[in-house]
Length: 358
Ligand SMILES: NC(=O)c1ccc[n+]([C@@H]2O[C@H](COP(=O)([O-])OP(=O)(O)OC[C@H]3O[C@@H](n4cnc5c(N)ncnc54)[C@H](O)[C@@H]3O)[C@@H](O)[C@H]2O)c1
Image (cartoon, rainbow, N blue to C red; front, side, top):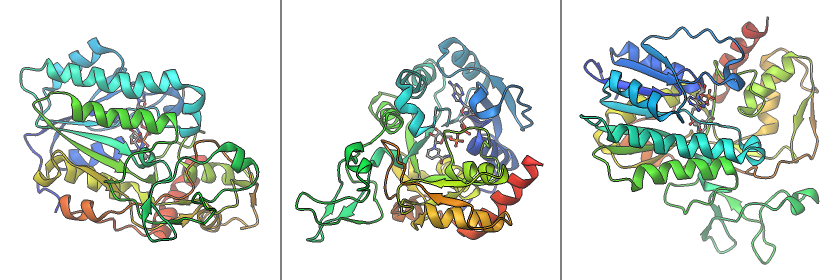
């Protein structure tokens, strides 16, 4: 159940001007929480001259800047911290590992040290983590045993072999991934996000962490100009520009697409549910959709011909074949359930994308 009010809570939100952050800020403001946003308004996400119109205190600063963080935290004196600021492009992280590690790992370490300097520590730190820490995630082998396969090899993908097989060559069957499978990230992004989790869990601190491993979040407000993240936003932007949608591999990549407002509701629950303290929790829908089907739905809802896509066989090293979350824990600990159907969510994303591009 969502709280009636968060009056009296001072919430410090890194990355609060971003896609998920800006909607979370509005949800928390509606509950009368006192909000401080700390965000460097990264140009790749926000463009060259962003106009940010959000409730609360906006502090433009970089998570890598320890002095700026200390100043902002001293002003806010947070009771709750939500850490969203991050570099988020899986593909880009392979080309720019230093930037990704600096921001995602170094930034989190600096945030933790700055929090430890506070006279009164917050009660909880909620991390926007990712399903990318699972790599390929959970599968069943021929004998019905759960296994987590190693990341796919580019040499195999180059031969058009996209699915996952066991050592004997038997096809593995994807299943919803629960939180307890061992992490096996297949990208620099995933590794840097896993390190954020470890930092929050391994540091001696007076607060408790809540780690939300998000699946693919989509919806209105996701940057249409950032080419490195948000496949559905990228599809909308490309389709509206008259381009043919390039469907990678054989089109049978699957994702668990979860609507942004459902994710925001999970963050609100993570800020107040006692059962969430110290826990790592998947946030998704528990349902999977192929990229091919998602592209068709987007074209339809934009009123465009569904022939405007091409299955190219192209692939990206570090991409995951199938992703779907086991959300049993989220239902139990956050008393949360996703309630936006994929078609309803896509209709909202398409309508927003059309408004933004006209
Ligand atoms: N969107 C998804 O599908 C998804 C999935 C899994 C996890 N996540 C995680 O959720 C969080 C938010 O993602 P989002 O989709 O809202 O991304 P986003 O890019 O829209 O928002 C990130 C925000 O962080 C800010 N930022 C980036 N670098 C910064 C820095 N050095 N200092 C201060 N601020 C900085 C950006 O300006 C931006 O406003 C990220 O941590 C991401 O890893 C997102």
